[in-house]
Structures are given as C-alpha cells and as structure tokens.
Image 1 (cartoon, helix red, strand yellow):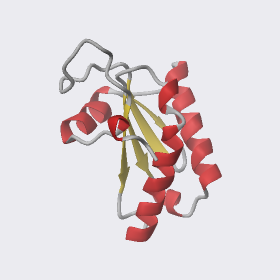
Image 2: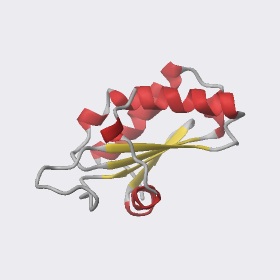
Image 3: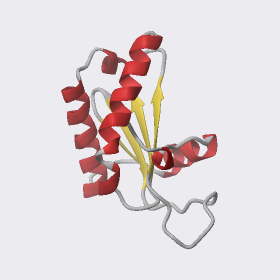
Image 4: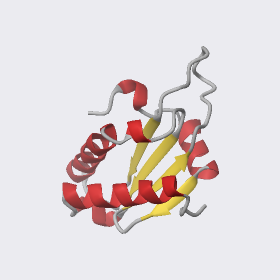
Length: 124
C-alpha cells in the first residue's frame, strides 16, 4: 500500500499536476507528472515527498472493478515513488480498458509512461 505521506488528496494538487505537468498516454492509463513541484502546504525546509493520486472513472467499470484498479495502481506506485524527484506530483488516470487488464499489463503501461516522462520524451 502507498504510505499516507505519498498520497495526493487535495483537489488543487490534482489540478496542478494535470494542468501544469507533463503527460504520457498508454493504452490502459494516462500519467500526469509535475516534476519537483514545491508543496505550499508543507512547512519546513526539507524537500516534500513525491505524492501520487489516482483517477478511476465509472467508464472503467463498477465499484468493485474501480476499487480493484485503484488498489493495483497504489501498489504499483509504492515501488516507483522513490525513482521520481522529491516534491513531484503524479496523477494516474485509468482508461476504460484498465478494468479488464491484469496487474502485469498495468505495471508495463505505468513503467512505460513514467519512463517516457522521466526520459524527456513526454508531451504536454
């Protein structure tokens, strides 16, 4: 499970990542990354942690399927937040095909999208 300090919860943080970040699309998901953004909500001098949020709409499936997809994505991001720059905001939006996909397919698409964003090949 993704630790609480790495979860994106505020609406304005989701909006910042989506509107001002870079985007990489894959068949099962779209990843928005706002790299190294400072966190206005965290006091102190240390770099804020990387935070990730997830958007899984009703187009993906019913409540059980949506929650399963969110749990899988949180589990996958837990291992990947350390690879991202401190203070980054990540929003992972599941596309309708994600409900039928297995964990390996989701992992492959998430890795490909993050690699594209970190490697400089992403689009806005």
